[in-house]
Image 1: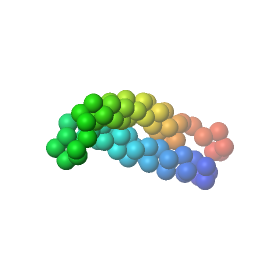
Image 2: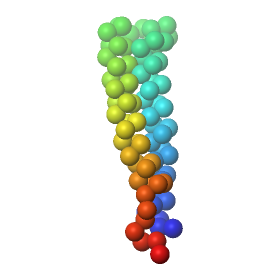
Image 3: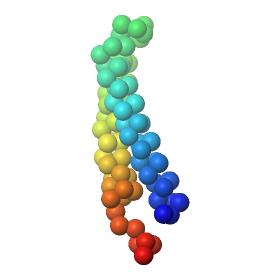
Image 4: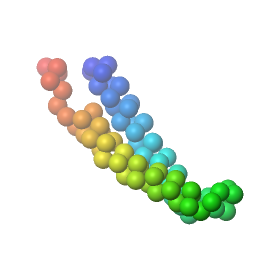
Length: 78
């Protein structure tokens, strides 16, 4: 197996954890941070919305990485 393909698979798996981080951070900032942090609600809403939108974007990017790394035919294999 090609080392480059192994690295692509590791990056794809790391991408899954980052998606969970961004979505979890967005949910936290929108719904739970006002109880723990003394920050203006507008700023928490902006942060939460930004994290959620970026998390949704990362879902699509990570899906593409996963399909390329795990389910595509490698041209070098014979």
